[in-house]
Length: 200
Image (cartoon, rainbow, N blue to C red):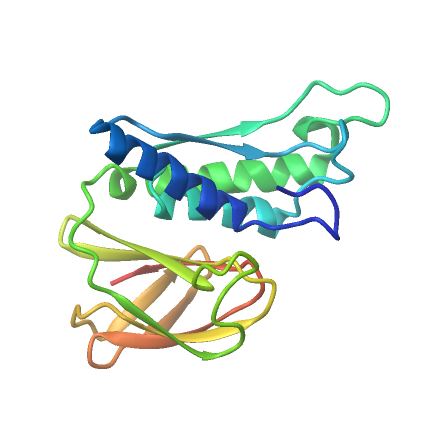
């Protein structure tokens, strides 16, 4: 979905994941869904996704049903480049892969009931395709709750996230910060295309 700065819509991942899920349900089938996220430039695409775009597309895919993750790239010829051509792009992808590895035992758990509520306090309430600006997925593992939250809008958003799970402190994984939770919820800010992974 990242062809250029003018034609850039990470929410296409949400749309496509919902389409695949709906197709499987209509067919009465259950099957693993592997998301294939763009990570190249050239061949009609003017640039790589940024690190933030690659990360948010990864988490949007997981939040909306992906059970496996891979990335589409090329070897590269001329002005067409795969992910390993640019050291910064390659480093960003490896960082995402390390995060997913850290979350492996969480992500493979069956989804609990999704009762969380997100209230946008400031910023765009929806993304460029009309989906809620912040998508979430609640997971449980070994007595802890994990909330994956991704901002698919191009604007900064501030939101209150209510999980209904009583906890005093919420750790924001991969960011070395904590938030105080009250009445089962907390507030946080999201830069454009930001992802937060909460644990409590």
